[in-house]
Length: 119
Image (cartoon, rainbow, N blue to C red):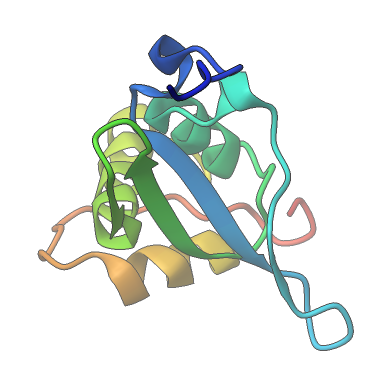
């Protein structure tokens, strides 16, 4: 008879998003350590827009209970572009490059860039 899991399934039966970030030539890329509560899509979008992730490279989504994973980078890039346009949020040049490189559909929006010296 199998032992019951020490991790309740309800905590894992959800979509979890993790961000791969580029820390530069010296440190390289790493999956950012994050609190379990901060791995939902909304929090990841807010964290990227607010600068918590300076150079996101890839976003992976998975659901352990359902047993699937996928690359969510393009979905997140498109959501970031739409959110930035809807709120007139200023975005960094690195985030603009991430959106342009990863959005799969053309978004006809002008993203606000920070003024020189304020980024």
